[in-house]
Length: 373
Image 1 (tube, rainbow, N blue to C red):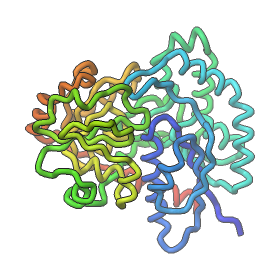
Image 2 (cartoon, rainbow, N blue to C red; image 1 turned 45 degrees about the horizontal axis):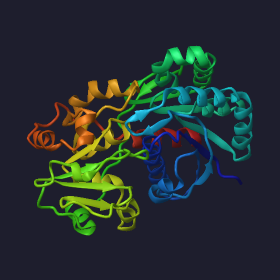
Image 3 (tube, rainbow, N blue to C red; image 1 turned 90 degrees about the horizontal axis):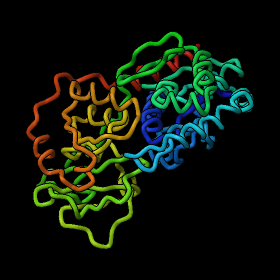
């Protein structure tokens, strides 16, 4: 007898979509307890290693693009015109893509589709006669509205196609720091889906050989990184240790800087959220993934701007209510003028409120109920 499946369509834009859906998948795994009575299928262009290193149950990965996201030079610089052109090419073939995806869903006995947040997922599910749920903090039509004039001039068909696809969903499970969902039916709000540390600060720092006697800052700019940043420019190294991951180690490493290959974190039995929880401050640009991790692990955030991305405005408005954070201009960030802001964060009071971060468990329980009913 075939085992029913849930298919997660996950945007390959950055790591945030993948990391939070892995938390949901892991919560589904915990919810099954006695037997693996549900297959997990993942459709994404996000890197396979991220799922292989952090998913707790077996899954089938169907690698390939399911949306186009935003074209970026790096984590701080976006490229608007190629973003519009790539979206136009992709969504111009939406009917054929949806039909092909629907065949996959039927062949694999998929009972439910989770969308974070490729519109193709909803269109494919509708074509296959399968319900889909938009589980995200934003929809792509809302993000693309930030480039409305360019879309109107070069690809006026894209935003209506995206909205029509979302309208075919069965429901929307909306996460905090949200925007969009204008055409998604039956929207309900969930708490944060967030990655929580599984190991103590002492254990992480000892095994990764990071000095615990000084304040620690983690340079965290996701899969895109920041081009041409020179750690030797940092003005904080006499007082702070700054940790870098996932980038080439320079020939000369300044005193006060630690480079850790990301594979080393996982080989030591840790995950990225363990490191984020072990430091005092994360230095980053605001995105749902890192913001939710700082909230869940009570880590302060030094943040900078990230180009014209409408989610940024929501983040900046809401973050002071839920975590300790301070802004640093990009010029100052790239020039290494961090010391004053880092020191101020150490002395900052707690955020006014501590929100719930159990959204993965709530989503997983509802997924299991829908597939088993």
